[in-house]
Length: 313
Length: 178
Image (cartoon, rainbow over all chains, first blue to last red; front, side):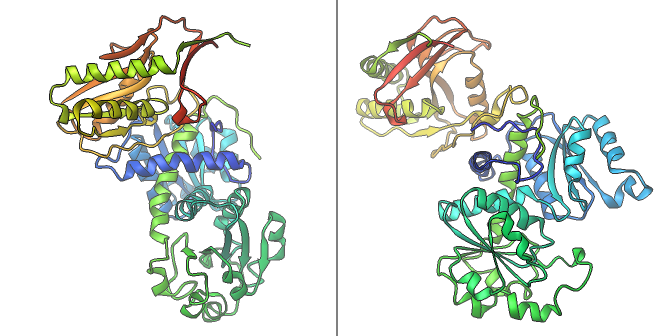
């Protein structure tokens, strides 16, 4: 199926077919990364701006490398070195970047909906690289890509997302993508971080970690987002690890072919035991490799959606 | 309902491929240097069929690969992104004579993209082009070395190749008005 969207703002507004198109396209781009010459001319002459108003290393680097491998020129723009410090608004910053004829703006922002806002005021393609606790669509693509590559399918699989769901944009994007593709999603974590309201997104909520991981084909661990928590959501890190961490004892009881995923950065010894993070069933580093492929696919597909008007969900 | 004409039936396709294979064999005396690279969709299956016929002529297997051209197209910012097909070149192209195989030769832009894409894998000694149908209307200075059938067409016509490998009930090449 052809991709016709000008921007990538969220997973919620995508169809299962559109998600599958991204995953299929990414397969071709993953192969490019395995060649001696890891570069194709698809975006030659295009300018990509990484507008990261919130710190990030892996997503920014991944987008930077993706754009480079597509032969685009890339400018990195981070909060520390920008005029945000001088009081410039997001809109003014973005319009200035557009005045430099940027073709793509990849934005990470602490405010949910910032990419949607930019897509309404700019002519450039806007790609959401994480907006507040709302969505992180390319993370969902790379998670789905990794699952499909390892398991051969997504429909019918039991996927457990464990950890800080409430503050996690990764969780929201993953839930949308996985449920649209037919997976059975279970959320688990402390009741303060995994409210029952998430059931409205079509997944199951439980606070019993042993039950949540028993039948899981995929266990996706999320980091505790200290920076987004305004008050204490659980008594201590030690207690969290004891009650919800993937310890060796819990790991011994999961399905023998279950895969361990984590969007990074991992807190070793908190949500995941250090040895488990490095074991053969952990696909954490493959997720990073696949992240590059899906981001190349997104830039490639969105580039073709230029003549169409965007429909915001 | 647009009018559709069968311009090559299963037997004619088979005959054309057999002739092309013999022409490839005649042109390339060093048979061990020849490898076929098909352009999907269509060319990849044709390349596999040609390799089979050539193996019979030369009494040795002929390497076959497939090469996607989507990422090397020159119209990427003028159209919806094309489908990316797999690329698989399971041999070293350096020093080889590569026969690119496509179903229909039209503007020549796919061939140009394919030559660029191939360069990323190394430097072939020669590149030759085999097509089942040449329909004219070239936009670039490109010409085929081996042609199954020349078909004069108008720009509002469309040529499609159906092959059993791709799930069709029978092999045929159809011409119809858009």
